[in-house]
Image 1 (spheres, rainbow, N blue to C red):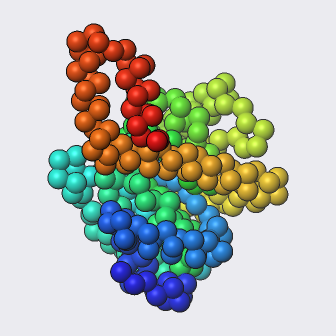
Image 2 (image 1 turned 60 degrees about the horizontal axis):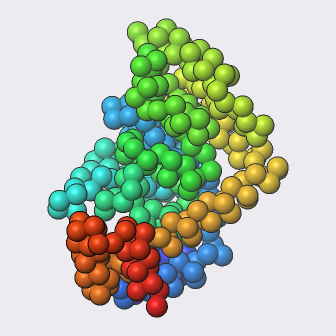
Length: 320
């Protein structure tokens, strides 16, 4: 699958789509081509603002992303949306309906929307999302929005690949705090109370006060204090204020060196994740090891070996 590097760097959408498809391929020859391509574009990456957006189903993530994307493109930015899509554990298929959910944004020249199937990876985060992000940066997109599926570990994994992590909540979110777990609130850089319009406004303001109070108790970061703001994605209200907060965070983080250190640490975690992924692939595709694994399980069932001894034997087989 030949990728024209000049076309990619020129921001040709068709070439970008083809490059991401290459990176997602499970064929060995495609993986080698993809990694060669990724290495060649590295000097052209890292210049975007990377934003993670999470929230429970029904909170209005897609509406918010579309409103924000249109708002930013009108300001002269190029916006890429990587919407992580839950794959079926049985068929491997996914919904891939993000372009219909963001119809207005998808029609704009400087927008790129790419739904990425999770392929069953931990927490729902697509295995190749990081590569897709780098390819979008090389194609000239200066803002990358990554939408999570809003369940499980996906928020923590996305937080480890973005600069600024945003959580969307609904008015009256006291009970919702339990639903999305305290840890997610603690890793967020900004909490947005969406649908803060009309009859919801008073309740949204109350929710804002509750979260500000909770954060005051449980969160103390010398670098940045989590903000809690009101927005109405459907009315595009509060977007300027939100974008000002993002820029304030980025400017402050660049000046202190925090952003550079954060990205370096994210790449180290990526290395760690890939290493164990490769180990698992070696295990899954080693017939001798699979045979030994079955023997080990049988020996353990018959009380003829300890799990420690069986595991050590298989490790020796894998690495010798």
